[in-house]
Length: 124
Image 1 (cartoon, rainbow, N blue to C red):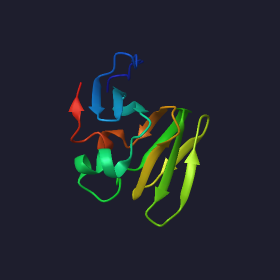
Image 2 (cartoon, rainbow, N blue to C red):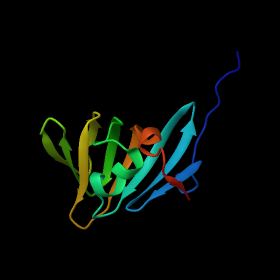
Image 3 (spheres, rainbow, N blue to C red):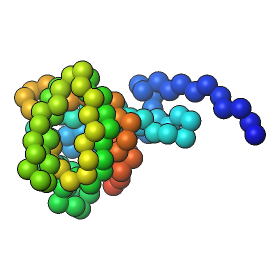
């Protein structure tokens, strides 16, 4: 069995870049896992910008992420709500709406969910 090799990726030159009206997602695969950097623009909202792509009433992709900048408001289908901001890590299960709070873009490093989130998007 071959020994695994050290891998690095420059997120400025990702394996894949996906674009949405109010978001862009850089994806890199290392060691068989995908990590991503999401950049969500102010004004981006699930029902307006992502629901037409996903074709579901709420986002069904679980998200495990570290928040670098901006504030993301998350509203779960059960009514639970929370703002998530810089320096916080979050696990957000399926079944939610979310939007950027204020005028600063939300930037996250994603460890789970981006591959599903990005389905149906436009490649850069």
